[in-house]
Amino acid sequence: MLEAINSLNLNLFGFVDWVQDGILKVVWNIFIWGPLGLVAVFDKVLIFLSSGIVFDLLFNSNSQFSWENIPTAFWQFEIVDVGLLVIIFISQFLTLQFKETD
Image (spheres, rainbow, N blue to C red):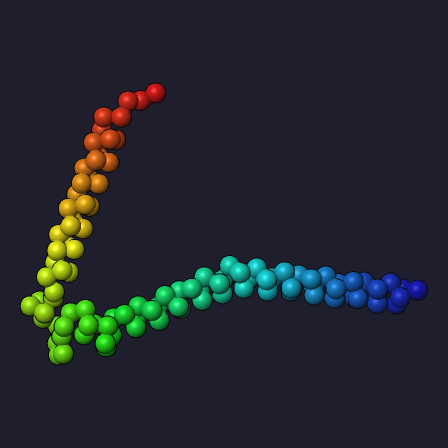
């Protein structure tokens, strides 16, 4: 009789282990491998964009990097970008300074 109970418990614990293992694998794949896969894809995209033909097309450089090879449109974009950053920062700063407390 005791052997039957022990074999029943072993089979039940085997089932519980199987369920726990399945849940662990699902959670691991969703929360660990999923984000790591996204990071790996993003890394590959950045490596592609920072090398070879894309760099040559954007900065018109056939050899080493030079500040003279950066296009005028890029500098214009940077000036507009910094200007918008300053405007947004100042508006947020003033909003927080003069915000009335409830």
